[in-house]
Picture 1 (spheres, each protein chain N blue to C red):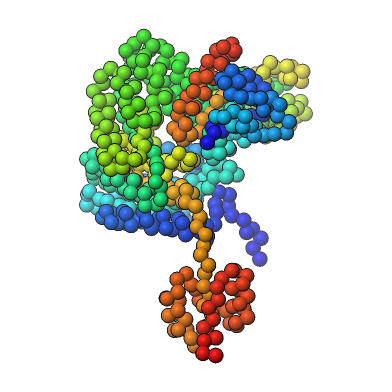
Picture 2 (picture 1 turned 30 degrees about the vertical axis):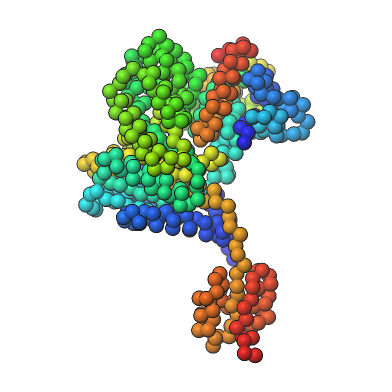
Length: 381
Length: 212
């Protein structure tokens, strides 16, 4: 007999209502993707470790194993890079619209209560450089949240080019810029204030004192941005963000739009706008995505514009109160009644065949599992 | 919903409570705590008392929004949340210490005892040395005296314990102080409340003359 019947740390079995909720949510998202004309793409769970080199593994690492030649394989920690790998090797005509769904594996701190296997569902638009790509992603982000029962959410926009643009314009030497950026990104106020004090007397002083806090309601953040002297690069980013904000306002006027202009891009291959969604009580983002025109450059010479979005199916499922399962009907029958039983099964909602051999056994199962027994053998007696 | 703070119990708690009070948080419950661990006297901030190494566990899971903990623990646990404010208390430093006959230049793989294996590993990596690390849970000073290790990496405030055990400091590693750590998502969800607290704490730090 097998002695070790424990699960590896960070994993779990999912069954019953929880598994059903996740299945429903994935199906709802897939139906939106399909309805908008996206094509399904399924990549393997195992990939060469090299595929994920562009990934910045912040507080986790991938599960690793070796293939028969001794090359390092990983259980995929991300679903976007496999799409890029696939695009670079197959010569698919562009623009392409993919959707995917599946689990990613990230080994987090042991015994901390976090799970290492997370279900995602998302889309990739490869070959679209227009802002219409961002708008399509945001439309799907909102539609996906609404379809899975999220009524009120906060949509966060950001763009790492803003930080780069402002830093470039600051009249300080490069090492100071690097230190300031580091302090800004880690929100280390003690260090940040020490560095930004050097610029108090410049035209940037007024803005810099607010920069670590430059996130929150869209219009409030934009007011602070107005304190900046004109920087051409930053101006384009701001216009872009304004256009997207207007778009969301028209599409979903009841949702809160916030802006964060003090954070780094989620991954190094991001090149433009990034967006995420969360609810006031959640401890995880419901979705995240953005523009990553550098995505394919790790795999091929030619750069291709790309924008994408991924839903965290587990985070969406965590929000849904687990439904009370309605009482199931057990259909008990003799083997020669199989066809009749089949008919009853079709007509009775939430029913299942009872495969027990005797009426007593069927009765026992019904009582101990709190199920209703429908006995076909009694009829005509 | 109140903003939840995980406060390291013990010395950190004693040093930080005056700062929290000066920031306008009602800490009467913590001052007369008995055996309680949850304090909801303040209408905005709920404080829980936990052990230092557990602060990040609560914070990372999102069960609490803010944590107050020493930078020694943040460094050892490779913190990825925002360490926003140095509270200026609990100041001490990491040192490499050993008996007087220890030779840092000796040519062999040294054995180092410590409660902080990650910090120790990073330090020796930074000076291009590979050492064998033995993890000790407490009274680390014993290790070189008893012959378990060549030297230790530990935190010291005044150096008294080291001196009393005839240990000498051979290298200074990073400084340590108590930090306010903020969950990344909570910072967005409670922007104004957290900003108010951070600014009040900065003010309180200045008023109470906690030096940088």
